[in-house]
Image 1 (tube, one colour):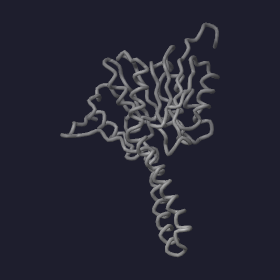
Image 2 (cartoon, one colour):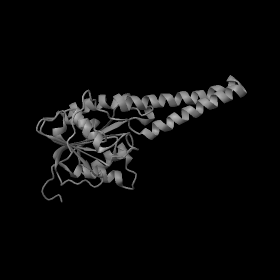
Image 3 (cartoon, helix red, strand yellow):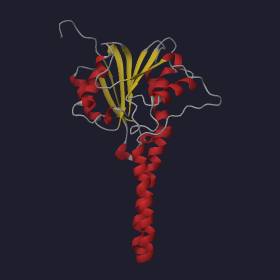
Image 4 (cartoon, helix red, strand yellow):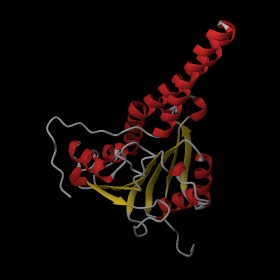
Length: 254
């Protein structure tokens, strides 16, 4: 499919976890209504409690919006710089959504290619469609370096050792099937070439990702917190990154 770049177009990446924001907005409306009702009936002695709840939800939503609209872009800019990409790499982004990380990575490429896979679910990201990602690639000027595929992270349609770098941002935790998250991590390692690099950013089960990679023989496995710019409500919903290198298999280890 060929998409023309519209005049004065801007890439639009939506928001992560739209049901969370809708839920927070609903709580704020209910809490404000309850605060007005309680204050009218019982006075300010008890009326402050629902207003405090509304304030807490607004703060939560504010952190979430900052992380999804700005914070993740700032953090991923630094993470991609750490990779010191040469421009000829084959990169895979698991759960690419509307392309925030995928297209940032593609801008580092010259002769290389960035492949994004997703199931394109609205519940994970607002307006999440392959067409939206394609439009963003055109607007960002990287369409010639990007390939989009509809695929399940737990069963990737790629041969072994195809990619130099595998990335994933806030996607693997969305897999709810038993054992699915582990299969996604193992699939990421499978499609990496020897000495290829893996970088997973997520908010849940990050310690498990680290453990599974070690069990599968990955090297240089490290984990660290990414700071307040990717708090999804507060420090209790912080984001971490796990990085690893696929070791070259020694003869006789199969």
